[in-house]
Length: 223
Image (cartoon, rainbow, N blue to C red):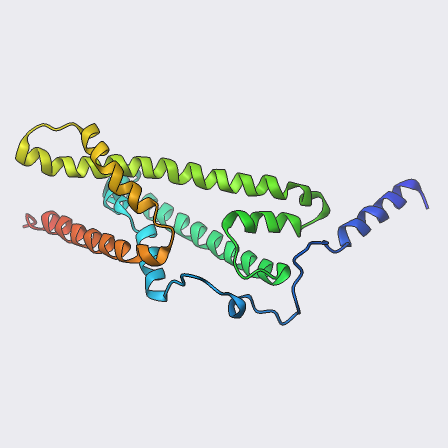
């Protein structure tokens, strides 16, 4: 055999070698969902509440402005396209996590752990990048939610200021942000989604009321 063929055979053999990790599944019949033990389980209703809160935020009130800038047909097309992409990505992520549960013997994993486990149990060239993938996901999540939370803090302060200015006159947004810092910090330090479900429910109700009021003022002057 030529040296090139020998190298190809060795590379193929290396690709087919099983990943030797500490956490191998106990048996082929391992069910991660039945074996899962959560200290603070979240009900289906609470999960739906969090899903609605995370999917339908205050940005929905900006949809008319977005459609005005993009046009009706292009706006509808882009909205549907982005929705399909987001749904498909979520589906792929969940399916990958389910397969990795059974391969690793774990009953639950975070986003970062899924990325790391996927690299560790992938081809030989990807196994050394498990830690890197984990850090990329962690820092990506941090950057996303830190910037989003910063923007939402300003939005919340501006909305409070509309009411304050109506009754007291000009008021600094910076002071409102400083006043909101402690309450927002306390909410952010709640570690369990189970305890945040009532907060999400109140937020959904407020958002629904806001949408109803907005629609009322939009339609009241129509001849």
